[in-house]
Length: 116
Image (tube, rainbow, N blue to C red; front, side, top):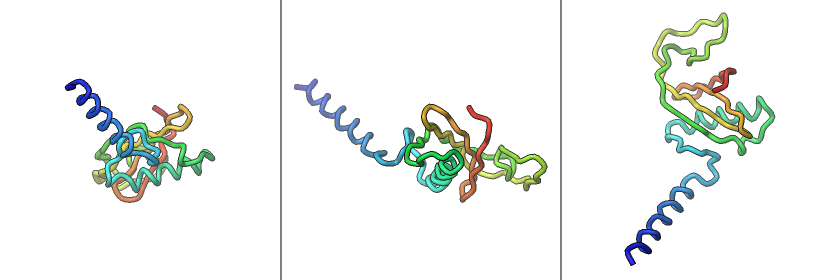
C-alpha cells in the first residue's frame, strides 16, 4: 500500500513538472524577469538563421554582472559605458547546435558568434 501511494505521488510530481513548461520551448526554467530577453534572443536567432522560433529551446540561463555595457561580446571599434550591467548569459539550441546570447535585464540581447 505504501509503495503504491509513493508511486502515485511521484507520478503526480513529474506530471506537474512537465505541465509547467508545456509550450514554452524551454528545456530549463526561465526566471520571470528574464522572459522578455529570452523571447528577444529566440526571435533574433530565428530571424538570423531562418529557423522557426518555436523549435528553439533554452538550454541554460544564468544571471551575470557584465563588466561594461558591451555585455561580454563587444563589437570591434565600438566604445561602451564602463558600468557594471546586470543581465543573463543565455544558451539556446536548435537541432543540436548551440547559440550563445548575452543580455541586460531590460531589452537588449547580443548574439555572440563563438559557440559553447
